[in-house]
Length: 356
Ligand SMILES: *[C@@H]1O[C@H](CO)[C@@H](O)[C@H](O)[C@H]1NC(C)=O
Image (cartoon, rainbow, N blue to C red; front, side, top):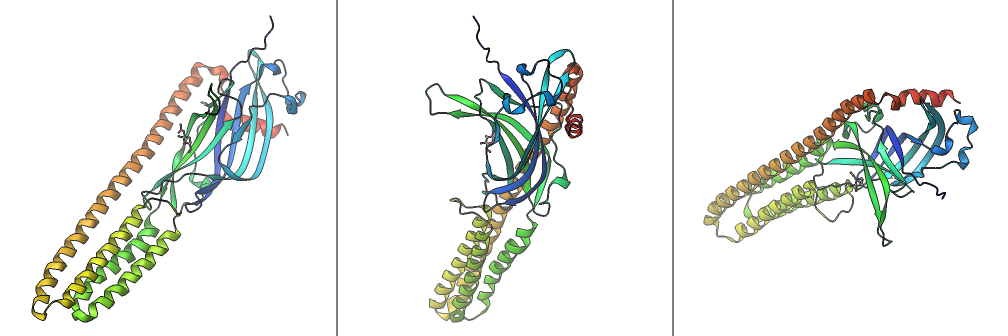
């Protein structure tokens, strides 16, 4: 009886994201330079100590690919062998550099207070029975401010959130999955630009609509319509920052509330011009009071929604940071306990360079 044992191979991953840039809300894309290192043990390489003795074209390949790329600009990879003390089978270390544009699904419901997850997905062509993709506990998945070039528009969480997952193939009866590995950077949009350039202007235009009460009733409507037209123009400007999604973003809702308010003023203007001269004053007072209440309530509601969104986003980022810190501590313990598996990504990076 001689059967080839099909063993599960565990592939450890250490990702580093360099120059995360060009986050495009309209196209729902971002670009990044990703360097990732993969580590695994291939029993067939037992006894081999130097990389030059291996014909890399013939060896077992973990078939790891990037899943959500739009365009790959550059891709390099290099293999290396790391001998393990007390074990014949060396660790294969593959170092890959990719510059690519990735597709992401952005949820813009909270725009411009939204937080996005920029995920790079790695997937293996082997089923989950053969390969599992896991985090390399010797690594420390951080992203530094220097590596992030959209600082003016986004704030980045200092840790990468790495999770393994599975893509189930439903085509076959006995459904099996492919291992996935998500490398996620959490970014929070900076809102100041939108606050000054859109929300403030919109607020002023809306507030100016109140001034129509100061002119004679038969001139009011044309003034209100001019201001309404301006608001509609701003609506067009807003849509330029957004993709055509089938839901309303928070900013869209604000614009709609402003348009509703101005339509209410237009209605009031029409009614007032039809009323007899002596009852206009009373009508103005009542409707102005109602409109002021509407504006205040609407802004309070928006304030509460924004406050909740911002605090939720902050909590999410905190959870990512705390998890990363806990992982760092456990990985240190893990390394102390299992000293032989110590894999320092830095050391290996140097090895990979010097073996040129
Ligand atoms: C991995 O990323 C994909 C796409 O962004 C997402 O649908 C999936 O839920 C993620 N998996 C985990 C475990 O976070």
